[in-house]
Amino acid sequence: MSNYENVLPLEERGKIRQDTTLRILSITVVIIGTIVAAMYILPYYILVIASVGANIYMRPPQLFPLMLKMDAFVRIITNPGFNIWIINSLIYSICITLGMLAICAPTAYALSRMHFRGRTQLFWLVISMMMFPLVVMYVPLYILLAKLQLLNTYPGVILPLIASPYVTFFLKQSFDSIPKEYEEAAFIDGAGRLYIIFKIFFPLVRPAILTVTFLQFIAQWNNLAWPLFAATSPTMWNLPLAIWNLGWSYTRDYWIIGAGGTILFILPLIMFVVASETILRGIVVRGIKG
Amino acid sequence: MRREIVLALTMMMPFLILSAIFFFAPLIQGIIISAYKIGLPEDKFIGFGNYQRMLKDHIFTKTLINSIVYAGYAIAGVWVSMFLAWYFNSKIMNKIVRFRKFTLSAVAIPFLTSWVVLGIAWNWVMVVGSGTELAGFAITGKEMVTGGSVSPLADPRYSLHTCGLIFIWAGLGYNALILLSGMGSIPKEYYEAAELDGATGFASFRYITFPLLKPILTFLSISALIWPFQQGAFEAVAALTYGGSGWASSNTVFYMARQAVAGLDFGYASALGIVTALMVLAISLVQYRILYGRLA
Image (cartoon, rainbow over all chains, first blue to last red; front, side, top):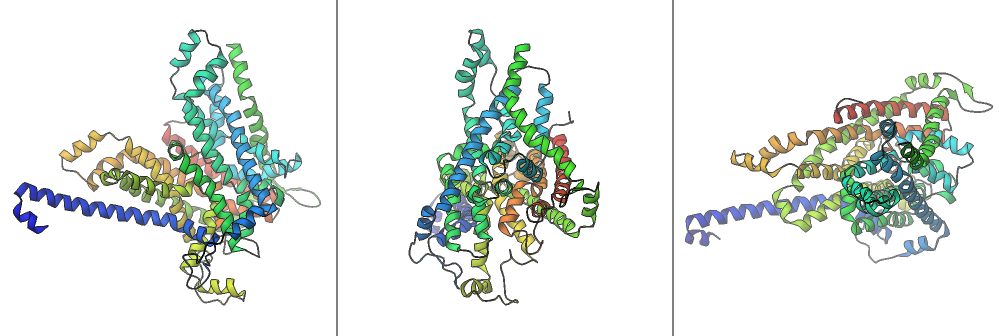
């Protein structure tokens, strides 16, 4: 390197020195990024290796599995209990997400596009609902569900979460950002209201709807607190609640817990890989985790 | 016009009915229940008794202080995430696109993971990192001998602060993504003008990026302030430490849930919930005032 510098003209030498600085800076940036990424991958890595047979309780701990043993996954897949919990999780997340879309989207449309008296007040009602943390409502909701004989039923777990102010607010904001001219043009051409909603409006808001679908599905798939209150019998548990209960029980099978945890986070991970753009944008627009 | 309001109300009817049954009715019922001592042979009306009990309840005080400590950690996390966002927004990082996307995804992934998974995973990180005695306990099944090193999540002296640090870790991606989008919307001309004046690197961050990000930082800080009183924090505490050891790391919401689910003291739990809700409501009102100017 120094040989070059002596031969080359002055300005070229300066350029090389600048290049070297840039290279050192780039390497530093990459090293920092690698350390940060490692900090985030480490817990997941330990979870996964424990689920395929590494004994992390050994001293010194095994940080690589000596051989891949998928027995824990086989036991989970073939265990009727776990099957029920996985199916429950799917039922809860799919039904709650679809229910939210079916109920909150029309509300958001009416709040965004229709003109009637009391619209502002209704919007403030939605905002005031957002100011209460939902978790403190779980105790009276639990009593209400018990009175309605809905405790430990699918409707009892699904219905209370459907009327979500967060989803309504998010969709209303997205609907507001779509120019009214498109619909007005169609209206002047003589299109009916339903035609306008389904053929013109709906395709325009598809990104927002997709964002809500992904984020709410993941949030409900991960939901621990609400099933803890509403689903008291083990046959109604969802996967997070079941694994949580296994984790704090007196006889723990660490292998099974690791495998269950892996299954629990693998689905959101797949969804993130498939639709990372949608999900990242969704996180940015509003944390609608509830 | 008349048809319009009928149509609008029809569209909103399911939402209004469901929120009346499952939001406003329980809200009112919660207020009513908080004035009772629920139990056998019958519920007893005690007025403000539950609230008076709260004043003398040192566990409530403890959990409230814990919640405030968590809020402090969450706000510190917002500041850490600002530097992370600055790092992601740097020129060099923007040149290595694939590396940037990978790192950003790694940082964002805890936001999409259940706290149950994070709880198990972090407990095991602690097991790997320390806790030889815990390991011996798990393998041999013999009684644990005190005096050795245990997992910081299980140690009453450290569990609160360990949880706080894990909360920073988990929230970093979410905060950084929001700040990144805010940084993206700052016009490039500002930086070019500053560069002409000789401000580069940290100086341009200090005098351009930071002042322009202040509204977002305020929003994130207030969100961080209410975070310990919400569902996410409840799940985090429940999954990481189960509030332990003792009540060392539990927040108010976790204490409320324990009173209801384990203690079956629904009156007291409702009172705890209402006090929590009022605190969050007060902070939210301040937030809306700051964000949208005067409150409508």
